[in-house]
Length: 108
Picture (tube, rainbow, N blue to C red):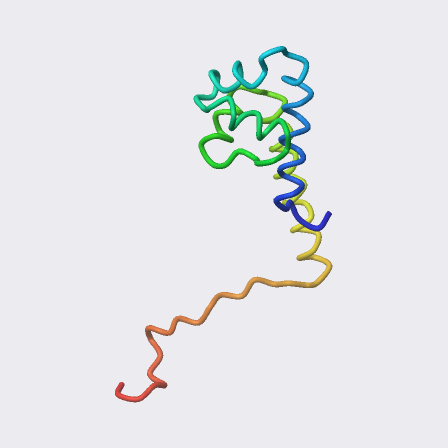
């Protein structure tokens, strides 16, 4: 995996939610109530149709420690891959020239 993409993110969220909440009888209702969403939205997350965005993800991470840990793992994995790619390619960060002080263009 070269970077965390939408599919990896959605599969991670769905997998964690299914493991933790799938066995519960009214999982979508219970989780929806806990994170302030609708049961249909939560059912879509559990089915892998959609993945939570923004504030929904934050509320889920507050509710579910396993999900929080997996999201942090994806973040760290992405950082390590980015660092490794930068080193192997020899990418060096150079400052951009300050164009405000340039007198090369006409009129100044």
